[in-house]
Length: 222
Image (cartoon, rainbow, N blue to C red; front, side, top):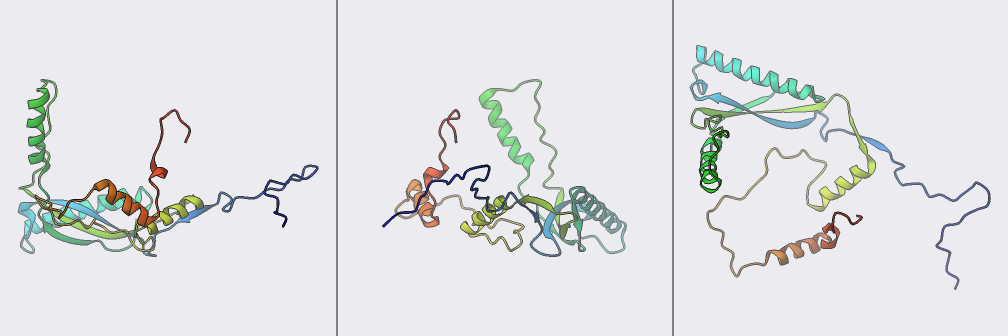
C-alpha cells in the first residue's frame, strides 16, 4: 500500500499550494450576552445620619440629592467608556460596610514600624475610611455598548473554550459577586491532603498538562 505524500507540494511557475488560516485573521464584534446590556453594580457611601430618614424631611431631600448625584456620576463615567444606561437603576440598602481599612491599616502600620522603623518623611493615611459613620447602598443597572468592540476570532474562541473548560457559561451574565464559603478560623481535613496531588488530579480531570504551564529561563524562546 502506497502512503500519500505529507510534504508540501510546489508547482512550477509562480503558483504555489497554500493553505489559508481557518479564521483568516477575522475580527468579530463583542456584544453583551443580553440585548439589554450587561449588569453592573456600584456602591454609594451614605452618612449614617441620612439613612432611614423620614419622608418629606430635609434629611430625606439631602439623601435623595446624594443618591441622584452619585448615579449621575456613575452613568457619566460609564458613558465615557462606551456604555449606555438602558434601565432605571435599582437602589438597595443600607448595608454595613466591610471591616474598615483604617482599622486593618493601623495593624499593618504598627507591624511595619516594629520591623523596619519609622521615617519622619513617610506618613500613613489612616483616616480616609470611616466604617462607623457610613453605610453602603448598592446601585444595580444594565448598560450596553453604543459601539461594538472588535476582537480576533481566534481570541474569542480561545476564551470561550477556557470558560467552558472551567465550568463558566459564556452565554449568561457574569455574576455580580463571587460565592465564597463561610469563613472559619480553623480548617480541618480528615486524613490530610497533599496539595500537589490534589492539583494534579484536578488538571487530569480537566484534561490539562502541567508542562503546558511551565516556562523556562527568560532568555529561552517560548
